[in-house]
Length: 531
Image (cartoon, rainbow, N blue to C red; front, side, top):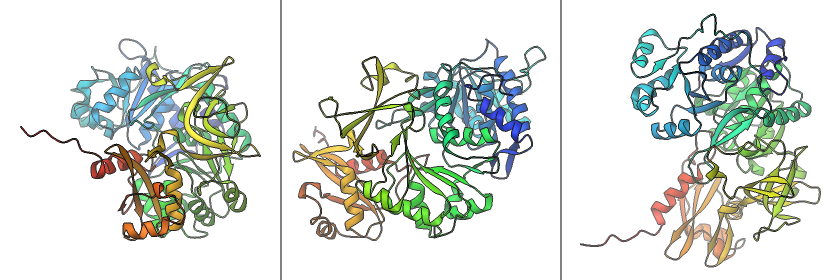
């Protein structure tokens, strides 16, 4: 079945199809699709896309919510030999149009949510892109046809796809958009070769089988969703989409579906702890747990490990630009807490086949602490807009490096520990402040269950603003707690209690939103001239 070339990402689905032809490939709520049906649908949809008026698309946009359509559409795009560009239907219309344009998307696959967005005015911004809308009822399809060029669901006899197309290692498999620290989406091109190296490591390290059940906590526009999807599909296991309602009782959801492999942002742990459901032994079915995308705290990790006593808990690290992950560290209460800094679990050791470089503030190589640069076979094909890559890449001795923007420390055994973002360092009264250090002090010295600290410009300086979870406390009480453990310049000036931290679509703490709120509350306001 893998005659299309083992380096093609979709060869992994063919492996799963051979193992579990009648097994569930994806479950979304009560809806399921099995491997054989998903394969046949993907071939049909791929043929329809390739037969689009004007010739085959350059890339396929998947404009959808959490639906079976979105998963099969990714498979169909790759079967057609085209890059998949997943975009959430709940993004603002202008943002979606800009993303699709930058990715040179020339055909869309939509579900009901995507179709509603097109009918609500987005279609006019896209210049009449051909649209495949497989699961719309007749009335909705007719309404969509008024604003979009609908493709027939089945290709004709001369254009039907009888087998998936192959792909070369340098061909782009996915375009994923990452907002980074600016909030402006940057499209990252990930190739079949990038994916082949990452998944070869996953296959070698972990004992996944068709008997596993994988969670899908992230939306399909995040790179951890790529890992979930193709690890599950390679072994013929089911993938279960995690609905927003599941977090009200996450252990109950895990038990209901028999989930054995979990991957999400660490914010999910504190979210689950606040429900009171994450208690020791509450998730016995889990075998493997992965957390990535944010700093993983000791206390949260310990709580998850106690709830999932049979699971290894792995902290993974890696920017989207380096294809999902480049480092890993397996939690050990004694060793991890000994090695970690600021209450954060170590990032771990570099993946095989890659290289890492630490640079000091002057851009010179450092032996044990500095900004992390990475290189290797998982280095992506770059950004859609070359301007986004300015200052992010560096060639040295014939090797191309990617600048992560993360400050790390290398330990004696080679593992890295996370110190913070280079752009999260702020100057307060001439004193360099590492925000992660202040957050750790708040969690350790004060009775709070969570803390995020941001810096806002005030007059000619910067003031620290702390957002916290827990009981209401006065600034004086916080100052009393923090004075013994922090220099005066590092103690926040302002404190705001929240019921919960804002999360982005992938359940990561939305620091940009908190920074904006702090600036609105405390930042310097430009006086308006009186006429």
